[in-house]
Image 1 (tube, rainbow, N blue to C red):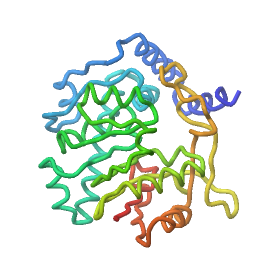
Image 2: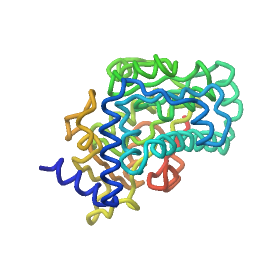
Image 3: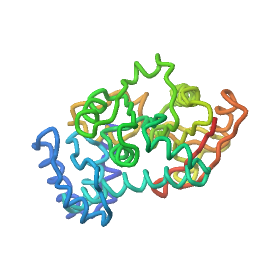
Image 4: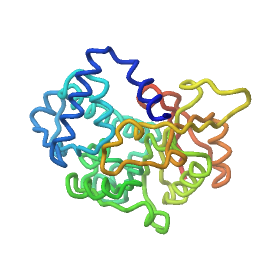
Length: 288
């Protein structure tokens, strides 16, 4: 019943005619091959920028792509919005590193030194742009092992499965965790954040996002709220669907909650950028 209510809530935001077109588009996608081939010339015309070195294929199990199809009235519009959102995230990362004057760090990664980890990478919406900027130097990790394998095959990133990541002592130059902490319950939120901080090499940078109080009105004195609702409840047909709603939902946090967790790992504080990611997620930057 919760799944039905959540689906109805989302669909009410869309015009009825568009809703029908969206549904038909998504259903048509489910009959497509595992990897959807998009012509690079098409992507270049949609983005209006040079995409040399960019992988343009999309997995049919990519929930971020399905989400775009749900909220547009054509397949090509979904493709455009999908690539634009990935490009904007990668540009945001570059802007933050520039602001922090990490010029030598960025240059070294372009030259094959250091390691960039896209954590909770999904099926590579952002990873493909990072791989374009830092070729052969991007690593990915995700709870869905199928996603890690797909990125390795189609985009060429080095992958590590989640269970192996938590056992590893590997350190990274830059770690990006976009739209992960907007889904985790409190225990997992703390566990993942502290592990990512400890996985930074000295001088490294962690960039992560959350949903904050600007997205959801909190109950009085509440600084953390987890709701058992997520996009996985709508797209149940994907082959790697997450069923555990108590482990992956929708999370909303105040800045003070994040600051208190970071203090457990370091005396360094996070820089804070409200609503920087997609206009609805707060971004935190931790420097080790």
